[in-house]
Length: 444
Image (cartoon, rainbow, N blue to C red):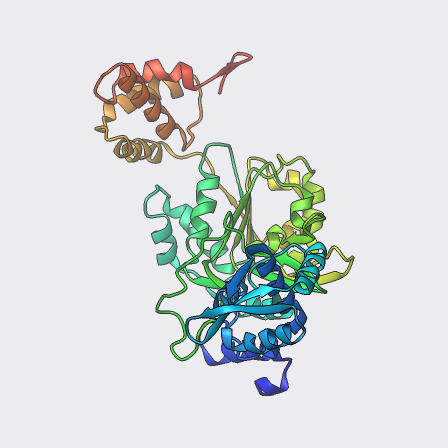
């Protein structure tokens, strides 16, 4: 095998980290070459930051671009020599305070017109691809104990565990389908908790001169980068951020645009697609079939990525790029999978798990479970009254959301009337009409 010095510098630096450690950790670059970036890209970020802030020490600039101060010293020297910046004072630790010259402000404004991005230096796309391969969710293989921990505070029957376990372990994809109100979304969210390890992702990617923001606080949960998992002998590359394995969830608001790189023509900065943001984690498509786009259109977009584990995206420049498609994708739907997709697509989603109505025993236990949440004593006779008079007599199906919802309505009734929160038959009689609707003579 070639040594890291014989490989492309950025990729070799990352690959050396992978081979020498049990888990992927991005190593702090020791030179401009090891960043995988040109000096011009870094210069422009430094100049735009100074244009924004006015003046800053070398270490402040280093902190903003997330690169080591020592490898920026040559760039500071070059910028001074070309009269783009000047020293306006001294700073601690043999550092200086820098300001832009008039020529530097002209260069910074011109660069800002090209792209207004200011912040952490980007990571080359090739380095990101290496990191995804090293941190793929398929390598984690959760076991029964991981599922039991993730579902410890909700009621799940053993038969459901037996179906979910192999599906989660595969890291491939699944349909969760069944009647509304039976906990499909809750199950899907808990599945993502089975993958407990953290991963590293770049804050920003760069390819063909285009900046693409990858880290998204709405999708990613950042972890303390000062934890014990850091390398002892080497600092980590601050352009990367350690997060929990992502669990990205979208519902009826999903559009085809969200599945592509989205470009802002004003800032000339792009945002990663949902697939990129969910790599090495889970992507939950909730309420599938209710989006504004047709299920067939959405599924056709993913049929090749699901087969080959790669996706093809288009940069604002028009260049097509190949990126990893490495996540557990979960479709949660109230509809039958066969009504939404053809055989060719269903073959690529290997697991179809029906989340059916609870049996009467589980339904009763859900009331006991929900009663604890509102600090209410469980009364079996009140539940029997409810089942006999409001379910069996009218042919109403059990749903897993009913115990929680009905008891919360009882709590609201009691609190409003200044009464102790209790589970009484007459309270169920009062809240049932306001909870269930009657349409065309059929109770729902």
